[in-house]
Length: 332
Image (cartoon, rainbow, N blue to C red; front, top):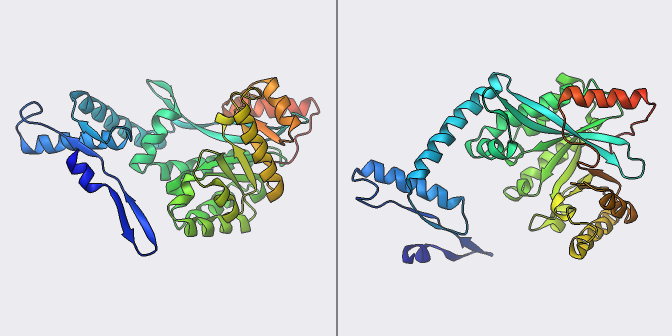
């Protein structure tokens, strides 16, 4: 702990004050072995566990860490093979107009249909893909597949695709988006890229260039998970977003949670001032929808309108709407 205290703190830098952090992993002899390489490896495992637990910056090795590491390595190898073997697929969740309840688009959501484990939750494998760098290749596949599938839908229906930080950081990401549109034949205006604020922090200037490039081509850009970042107001001012998506954590307890209600109201006021439409995520009840309609929120996404469904079920829903004579407004 004294070693960590000596390492952390603030460093003076021309025009700035930099904050330094440190996570330490510990392995002891003879409890954790005598071999130097084994001890270093186990200390490294403990350090990585400490990095993932910000409230516990010092971590002592535990044998269970080896089991978790082996399981993680095995899952990583399986995930690498999953893309080549066609085990990844897209589910789609509708986004609806709050007044008419008609569909205004779909969000593409990644799923992994494992040959023995069944449908693996994205909460389990997406963080793994991000930490190992696989998210770049997987994210490109999601973009291409979403555009390909949506190109076969009625032209009035848009598609929203999440963009990972590693994707946005790549200099050629705008070209990747253009290629996906060109190959699929999807009109640029039907594609919406959802970008979380965390993706913009590392290199704002590069992110701004990439976002400007895709917008010049006609692609729409939404700020995802609004309200969970540290500088959302500054980010909205700095980037030309076409939509704000309020994070589901602020919708869950509406309309009874006064603080959440105040945050949602203020977001609507901000969106109106900036001329950016707002979509609420995680809408599950009629009471939540009624509140959102009352305060002027344009659209919603959540279990009230439909859970994520595979391609077949999604296209059956689209056909049913068309057969019933329901008009599906243009996305946005």
